[in-house]
Image (cartoon, rainbow, N blue to C red):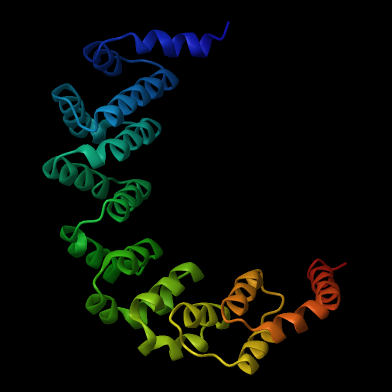
Length: 260
């Protein structure tokens, strides 16, 4: 027998009202998580919130400030999952609750929800956080969702504060060819990738120089992909012929970094 499976099956036999009554009781965290997952599965199937679930959510929001940090993780997870099915009013309450929490992790939850469920009504919230903290999550949201005119307003600060090359590429892909020369001096591999995607001409001679400058970079396969897209057959053949030497040089670099 599998006690966990039997327990899950037994709980699955409960009515919505019985589930809600159990959640309100003082029960073990593992059981509460199982109950919440059942409710979430039910909501996903129906693609809507029942009256009982809306009441449960409102009750949790009212009691939120009294929850222990450990319990907040489960409740926060529940709010994450029901957010897309909630009314605009309930969504606003969930975000406000997260943003006003004393725990930074809950504020991060709010901005992850905003990023995943974007609406232009969130622009002001994101702008305020960006102006105060210049954090990476706000930068990601601006790049993912803001109109180009607003992205241009924050361009210089975004470039200084982006901590992931993926979002650096997304920034320049959204801004277009006008800004691409700036990228060449920031990161050559990202520059070459963006240039390839935007059909900006980069000579094979320049491509070889960029390869030589970055041959030990972990993203070298991205550069190889760009050469393939541009049909740089001669350059790819040259790299192939030198592959054994390049691997040996890479291994030597690793040994030196490890002090071997």
